[in-house]
Image 1 (tube, rainbow, N blue to C red):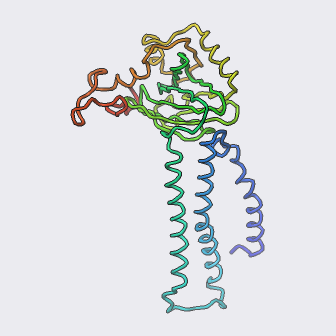
Image 2 (cartoon, rainbow, N blue to C red):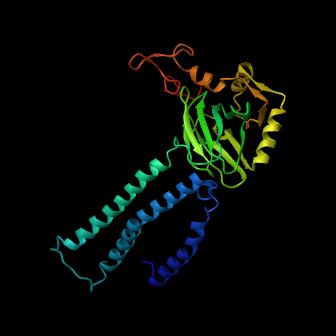
Image 3 (cartoon, rainbow, N blue to C red):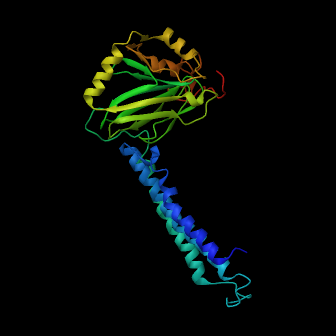
Length: 313
């Protein structure tokens, strides 16, 4: 057996390292949010963990304490082989978890509605609309109001709501900017929505959080949060690019399956009207024609009708 003094020294050393271990991940993007949505999700995460630890920690402590107190070598411990019930214990072990579950249920209900990704953010500032398309293995972004498009880079002003419209021209992916919070799926033939905001300037990484093939690790992009002047300058830089995004240029872009290295940031000075909607309609039955059904009404472009599910197109 391990001597008691040696056990105490080991526990003391382990406890002294615990704060360092807990703080080691403080620079993680999810725990270092730069937007209101990310901040609210961080608060919800920490609150939920603390509430669950109110049960977990006492259970662990009591397990160790009971094992030590009622060990075979402790002859001073009470021995009651015929004990079978305690009303006080029953009340404690049932009431406390039930109250914690009730609090968690209320938090879950309220946060599910407050943090609904489809819910527009309350702001007096006009939002920026960004249409995101998942490709193999890169992200294409269309700014319909600015008439530009980019690959693997976006920019937006701070304190300005971002209205993302998201789809995929390949397998299912997941759109995620960890510093801003909330990931949501991108699926072919379907449009999903996401509303975010950045409250601090900076360059934040974005990625696909859903495995989508052997080039998955190359599917990253950069999100630049800047002031309004910086955003206007970025838009002007994109408009000065020599390329224009039409159907022919898109086919070239989509065919380049960059599984060996990240696709370089690319700018398009203009974009063909209706490009985003056409990418959704191409997966509808009839090569873009609306499918009849659902009570003889035309199917919406946002209804999932056909979707790739394998690693190859």
